[in-house]
Image: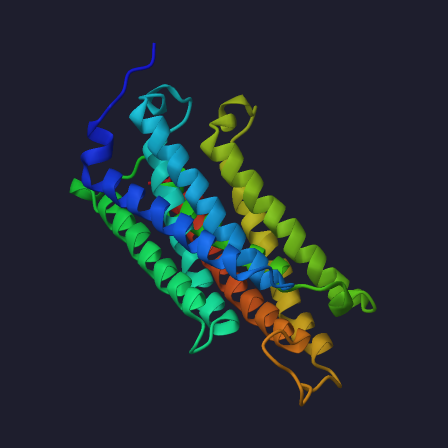
Length: 284
């Protein structure tokens, strides 16, 4: 039998979630009324607002109906991780949209940008409240540094995929290797997240931690090759065109380059930390 929990709506976290859901919905509507823009960055922004609004409302409904307490995974871990992911998505969106699609006389675009920043503030407040628990307790994998780094790795890979175009890598085997690196490492990260949060490690006849460490190290090495190959091959005899505007394909090459460097750093930190935890800290 389903019971309703009104306290979930009146506590600070519940109020922040309701505000975030309303603001993302308002932002989505404002941008939708302006009209479609044929750009992967516009699509990314719309997806981010829609994704955050849908899952925030889903979390609110599941907590209000007390269904969340019956789910077979750590609910607090999931909601804390989602708030962090929403912060990352909205931070990128709140920078991308006004930079590329707003102007001084675009009222609805400016309103959407302001609403997006306010929504980012709501999610950031939720992260502060849920992460700053008494004693600093964490409730699961996604609330730990390795879990947060895994989400960041997947998020940066999504930004890479958003910026990629077929014409960027189709004619070069080195660049096709880079795209393979982005894809394989994204799959590795998602598998680790799903297996760990779904508690599927209990069904493995061996310890999953060394496997996760191996994935991290291999991913870091693969990203190191992509970090070298992508800029060398992409910008060789390829200067920025004089008529390159906001939606210029050359600028997307720069975005992919920076995201590759950032993700290499994150994977390296993740590898070092996971090696320390599995082979050194656990031995004590």
